[in-house]
Figure 1 (spheres, rainbow, N blue to C red):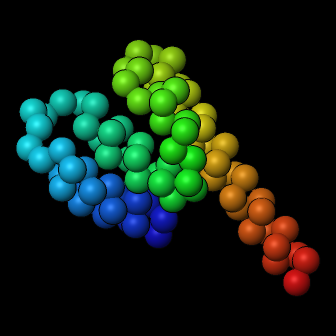
Figure 2: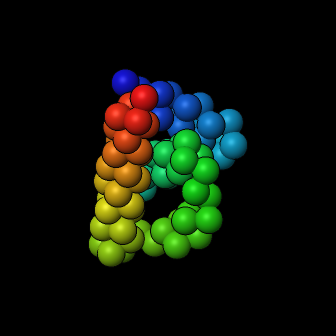
Figure 3: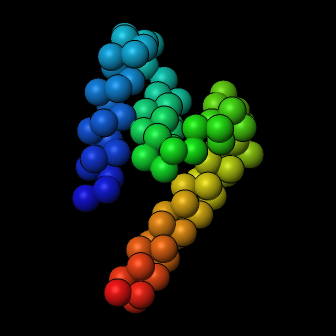
Length: 83
């Protein structure tokens, strides 16, 4: 469900801001990148991985996504446990 909202917002936002671009393999990362980090309010992290299209940039992006997802799930579980 989260993926549907991230992709829906990301595609709309990216197309409105950047318009038509030449098709490349980096466009899906750009679409997911801003939409995912806006959800958590961590836009300062975008400066680290914004235009780093090397293998370490993709690894950093994937690790940060996994970390933020696990942390948000743990915090929600903690909130439910406290109630």
